[in-house]
Length: 304
Image (cartoon, rainbow, N blue to C red; front, side):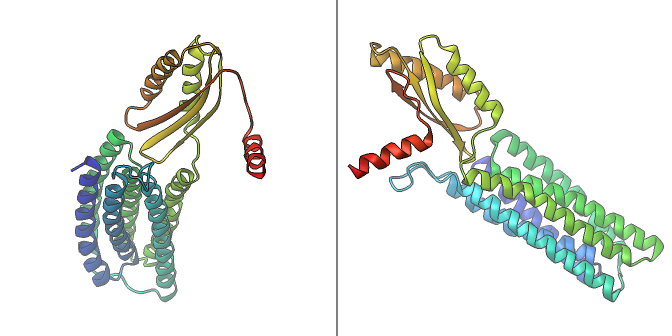
């Protein structure tokens, strides 16, 4: 079993345990903050289970039907995950407003406080574990999972603080205010997950730092006359790179391949955590065209 799959299973088990514990205390105590945290943990459970299947699907090898693999399943999962987190944030805000209006009483404060302390400790350990897996694998789904469990950590701390204030002051409005703030924070935290997933689905180029290093590698070889049409993208697991290399017209094809293979090896070493699919094209002269010019040329050929 891959580290990514194992991480989603561990996260699912933790989320299920915390969900049951928080729901029991949240409903019994009437605390909207604890109930909000319970709903968040329930969503964590669903998301972690969903992430397991997303990672399983993304790790499938390329087929004749899906010749570039299914790596973008991770990006789809990240967008869905971020959307679910956002909806949970709105629901928590709704519950907080309801409590502020109706002023329901919070009971069983001591058990609720202990539940949140346990939740903070367990979530902290889980976040450390997920971050270590994310760092080792650079997997978008695990990074998203680690990010939303980090938000849970802060949310749990806020709930604990709210319960403490209510315990010592008796001000029930504090529970509603903290619940509202947690909802806003959850929505904000989901934005980054959604954006990163959408960028991958839209084939955004690799980070500027990586692209600059690719330029340096291509420019370092003196046997290349010039190069153009450097394009990059990623599916979250594999980085895709293509470019045109201009050689002397009389250079042997075997020599062009030798040079290209050497350049590709250097590019792959820029990020050993990711797979690389590099597609070079060999030109005997510089035939730089813009995207629009290539499209126009294609249309003219079809018209003829």
